[in-house]
Amino acid sequence: RQTEKRTATNRSRLSRVRTFVKNVESAIETGDKNAAQSAFRLAEPELHRATTKGVMHRNTVARKLSRLSARINAL
Image (cartoon, rainbow, N blue to C red; front, side, top):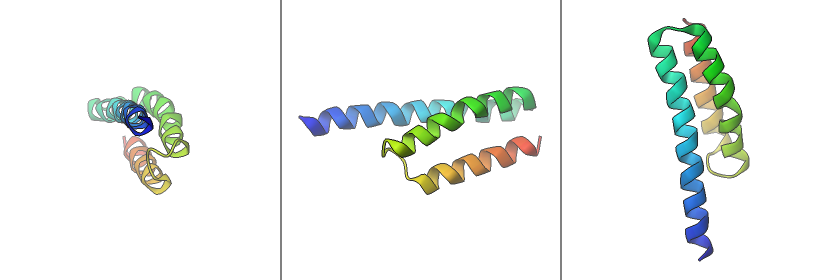
């Protein structure tokens, strides 16, 4: 079925996004600003891709990116 295929794809995309965000958060917790910035640069397009593919709402993505960048700038 189409729904099952799309559900699997969306679940995979969402899992990928969560992994990238988790990498940024772990870099922030270690206090390494350079590592956090490079992880953020990798996570940003992945989050935007989730928006264009309809997996996440654009405001949710904007909020996540805003909060992550604020935490990186605070380091």
